[in-house]
Structures are given as C-alpha cells and as structure tokens.
Image 1: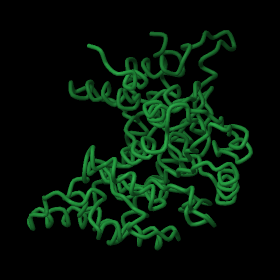
Image 2: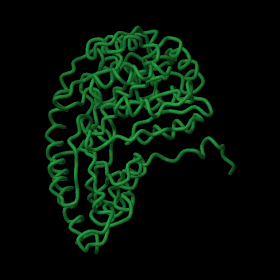
Image 3: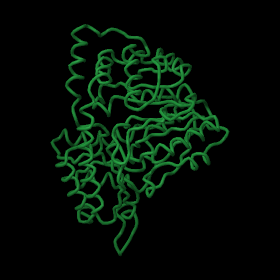
Image 4: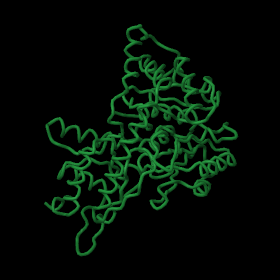
Length: 400
C-alpha cells in the first residue's frame, strides 16, 4: 500500500508502544511493575462524574459549537484568571479533543514546509513528530541534568534562525519534571518577541509542582501576548485523561484559524465530556492538593530508591510525576564489568523481559542514557519495582 510522505515522517508514539507491551503481559496474568503510563492513577472526582451523568440525563448529547460550548470557554478563562493570574476572553479560547489535539492543530495552522520549531530536549515524544507531519523541522536545544533540565533563554536565542517560527516550552516537563522559573520565562518571552517567534507553552502539568515551585503560566507575565499560545488540559489536573478535553488560549485571529481547521476534522469535542470539564473548571479544586501530596510521597520514595542503585543518578523533579534517572554508567564497561547494553532502548526491553519492569527509554525523548519512570502508581508498586531494579542492575538478573 502506498502511503503519503507525511505519514511516513512519523512513528507510533514510543510511550504507547511500551504501554502496549506491558499490557500484553498483564493480560496473560504476568505481574508487571509498570512505570510506563503518563496519567494519574486517581479516579475522576465524583462531582465531575455526576455532572456528566446529569448531562446525559438532560440529553445534552447533540453537536455543539466547533470551538466548544460557551459556558466552558468562559469557565476556562475564569479558571485561568483565578488560578494562574492570566486574562483571556472566550473568543480567545478553543476547546479540543485533548491537549495533544490542541498542539496538533496549532502546528497545522502555523507551520509550513521549511519552518523550524525550537524544542528543548529532553522533550515530550510527540512534539518532533507533529512538527514533521506539519512539514517543519524540529531544532533541539539541550538542557542539562545539573540544571534540573531547565532551559535557558541564552540557549534558545542561539538556536533561533530566520527560519524559526515557533518555540515549544513544556513546563513542568514530561519526561524530566524540569520547571522553568518565572524570571527565566520572562527572558525567554523577550527573546521570542525580539525575533518575532511564536511561544507555545504546554502547561498541562501546571498544578503539579513541588516546593519551592508554584503553579505558573507564561501568559500571566506577558506584557504583550500577541505571540503567546497556551495549551491546557483537564487530563492531569482533574484526573480526566480518557475524557479527552484540551484547550488553546491565544490571539483571536489564531483561535479562529484553529476553529476553522477543527470544523473540517473532529468538529466539537464530545458534548458530555465538555459538561464534565465545565464542572471541573467551576467546581472545587480540593482533590488537586490531595493528589499532589501523594505524588510528593512517591517522588521521595522513587528518587531515593533510584539513587541507592550503584551507577544510577537522578535529579529531583520540580513538577509533574516523572523521575528521569541517568543510567549511562551501565552502558559502558567499568571496573572490569561489561556494559549491560549499548542503549537504553535495549535496557528497557531487558527490564521488561527479565524482571517485568516497564519503563520508557530515554531515546524516545531525545535523551540517550536515561529512563523515564512514571510514579503515578502506588507506593507498594514503586517499592516492588525498585526491588526488581536492584536485582537487575546488580547484573545477576541481567546476565541470566
């Protein structure tokens, strides 16, 4: 079958592939310590589920406006003002089928053949492929482990060329948990404005930050927001990953272009999910600090556990729910011991095969030598996974 050049530019999401392999084993009754899924393990809050049930009972199951029901767009703007200090009007908001869909739409509207998109690395797996699908070229800016994987404005400016159209900034970051401080955000914004480059902030993890960091949006600091785009979602903050509701905030002309595109693709996001998201935005936030407190406990357990394994180093993530340890010492010969493998992709396969631990290799995020661990799982499963990792990296299991 002949397929388009566009589809051949991209690959299946590496995280989805890892999850699929782990799920195959679990479906056969195999006990897998699964650190793959990047989604909360908490249920959607009851008041949100009840709002969806009410919407079903009231037959709110018809098509809606392509850009989303007006009460939800109003509620998103009000929530951003209340929680993050930014100021938007409903005409500057469009509701989509999840944050990934929002990003795909933005890239489709802004990026043309030959345009460059600057992406700090390590990066979320989908950013480069979406750029390629749109016809653009991803340009990567390396961040350093010793800096907490936080990108610097000076590094961004060095990567900008006359072809640069967009900078993608994900803070807190998936996969590293890196957080860009507000003062650095301001410097990065100034660089983008100086060079007439769009700045897209993926802020889906904004409310999962650990001290001393606080929830923050670049839109609250912008003197001029003409080149600023905000991507948000209810998936992480409200444990609603499967509901598939995301949104974009930006200049009205951009929003109208996004609505035009969406009118010829998905049309509206699911009506029932929109009413659930409306309750999430209008209702209580009391479940968020509960989730964050539990993530903080898990963060402590997994980082300390990983650091206790010889040859493994791990920074404290400033946000999100991922640990991103460096295992490069195990990819080279040392102290008379042979390397376990040549790549982290090989290591991740060995971990799943030999000790039934599922992780995502750093190569998927543009970071050879690293593994991503999601700690959106119980303390008990984290402890079990750490025990298996200790066995593996002691070489006893790896060599068998």
